[in-house]
Length: 252
Ligand SMILES: [Fe+2]
Ligand SMILES: [Fe+2]
Picture 1 (spheres, rainbow, N blue to C red):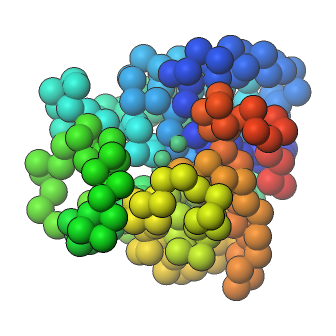
Picture 2: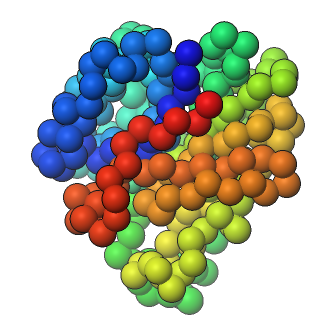
């Protein structure tokens, strides 16, 4: 059994979907795939992508990103969209809760950036007004910070986890120092909408050795304080033209 990771498949781009369809159907039949969010905002694309991956891998573990929770066009809230996605995963054998595979815990973690600081951030950087989540996410049920809501969902799920081999994953970054060099980023406000600091103590409390994340679309593989942090994002078609193609990344 091997464990692979990818994030930000964005298969609502036809080019991404076609590339995904070309991956081997025989290489990964004994392997686990971690998918760290941002498949699509459209339920039918999320469903066909996860079902395809589940037919390629022995098991697929998934946690939603921000694009999955865009809900306004469907006249529903982001929390109800989250429930719909989790229900789909439960019914189709996709893991969204921690599971032990041959002695290795694979632990999906819900996350979001700290929305309570966003109005202050907008006053510092008006580029944030271009951030689509502001217009397509609907948080009617949540009074406080969305990052608190999301990480509170993790508490019960991780309460029984311990062991020598724990791999955690989230869509957003658990540490600010995982942000890429901002000179490489055109959208400078990304730093305000990427980090979920509540995650770090949670993944440390269960002894995570490797944490997979996504969202910034910048590859990363670093050790910080004895935890390996990895991002292997697929990204948008225009981004892939600028770097070598990297599909599923072997984690262990
Ligand atoms: Fe993304
Ligand atoms: Fe994202």
